[in-house]
Amino acid sequence: MNRIYKRDAVEGMNILYEKYGEFVDLIVTDPPYKIVQGGAKTKGKNAMGGSLSQGSDNVSKGTIFDYNDTELKDWIPAATKLLKEGAFFYCFTNSLNMRELLNIANDNKLKLNNILVMVKDNCVVNQWYMKNVEYVCFFRKGKAKPLNDRGLKTAIEVIMPRGEEKVHPTQKPYDYIEMLVKNSSQEGEIVLDPFMGSGTTAKACEKLKRRYIGFEIDEKYNI
Image 1 (cartoon, helix red, strand yellow):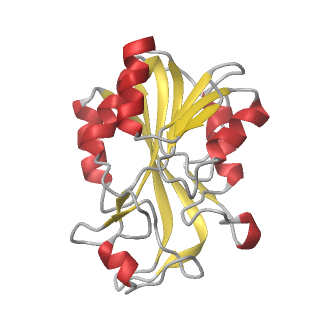
Image 2 (tube, helix red, strand yellow):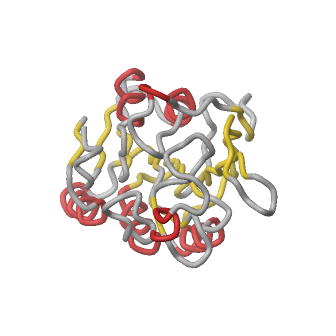
């Protein structure tokens, strides 16, 4: 517990399942996914003022990260097996990947509670309206249970990390991740993030007195 392992997420989750079975109380993760039509993948969503710009070779080739090959069809089943009955599962995505994510989640008997919208203070250049949101598909495994705070809205405005605060190209606002963890778990419970990146989920768990376990294969971001 309370470690981020430098290894392939699917491999690591399968090892955990063989040893412990269903033991995870919550999953919060921002996985690799396509950001351009045609198949290029990164773990990133370029934003104006961010690390990439529209038309960049990195966007077209999907080379912002060294490891971009993790598929939804591979990691979703591995993650779902680890969840306890009634546990929640938050997964960041975009419009290009939402249909596939929802289909694969359904195939793995994850039930959609809601689709959350993170409204950013920056945007991605696009010929069909500039994109300033990211989506979070909010699932559960098994029977429904209430959130800790049922007064929160589905769409929440955030300030994206910048400057020295931003140590990872696709880093999410700490306050937003903390909200998800706080609202969907209890002290002492176990939170899994298969794609830790800058470790925001781990930091939220430490502050909120949750236990955590995660994976980050890219040593540039492994902390």
